[in-house]
Image 1 (spheres, rainbow, N blue to C red):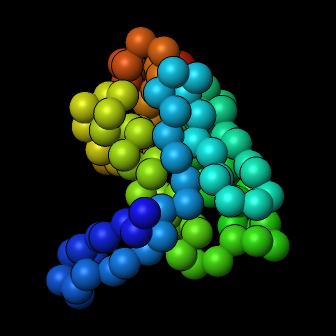
Image 2 (image 1 turned 180 degrees about the vertical axis):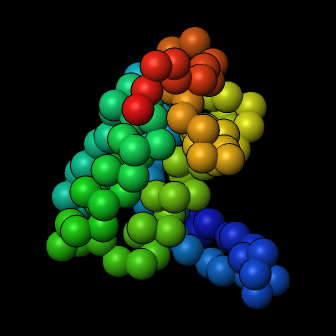
Image 3 (image 1 turned 180 degrees about the horizontal axis):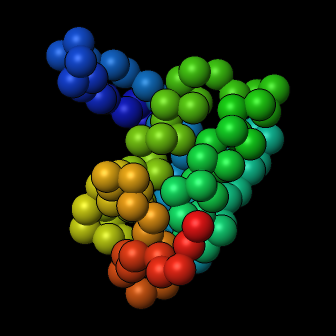
Length: 113
């Protein structure tokens, strides 16, 4: 199923195949093509953990720019479905938040350096 996205900067439509899928029951994002790859979203609790996954995926030999774009879109979709806001809420204004995927809550991290 193609994923149609409007890029705000260029105001142009971008058609990208949707190759990542959010499973709200087990809180995972799965790459639906070969090789099968799954990310446990409960290991994406902070902005830095999400960045780590982004770069973990980026360096896979099977990842293309469209696969990466699809991942970012599906992560945003999962975040909106779970927290009713966009993923930037994890690090808005440079603040450090923790995403509680099971309970659908975002809480500010206390006592961090």
